[in-house]
Length: 240
Ligand SMILES: [Zn+2]
Image 1 (cartoon, rainbow, N blue to C red):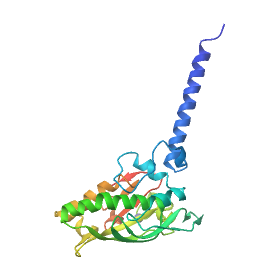
Image 2: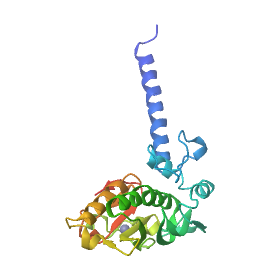
Image 3: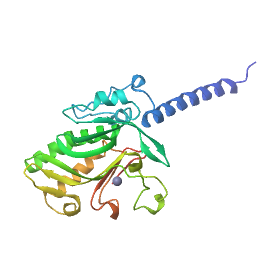
Image 4: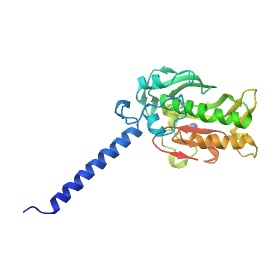
């Protein structure tokens, strides 16, 4: 006679195994370790506004240089691959690109991870540009960036002062504002707290950035961000 506890135990161990495999797969997808050929989702494309599984499809670019080269294309971005810098003391980069234009706006980037470059191009082209057109009647000509790569720890948060910033791995960008065709300037420092269309525009582009970047921080996060948006695609998510 078999004990009734044994089939039950077997069922639980099988269920546990299935859950473990599912959880491991999800973590691997989030960290970009699942090659695109095993992904159930199609590669991300810069041609149209992606509507589903945006985060996972962007993460698939992280370690996949051929996929990166296939995705980062003109006219969406003028990206050129740059050599990896092996990580040392938590600083360096892997699968990064340089570019001077993304989503139809000038933005100088000497090195930014491919995954971030794709997120940035999607956000500018499919969110920032249409919103600028409908709000101001003109497109964004250039975007002010306050820095990408910087071998340093997180600033402005005493609890994180010993943790490397995503800037230390070229996986983050700080944006100070926008210049429209014709020269009108929209500054995060000056316009965020206003009541005009500039403030509404800034708040809306920040809100929409949260679809593409895992971390999207602005002036409401803390005083260190009063003059810029910080976007990154690290392991954690925060939109404020
Ligand atoms: Zn930053």
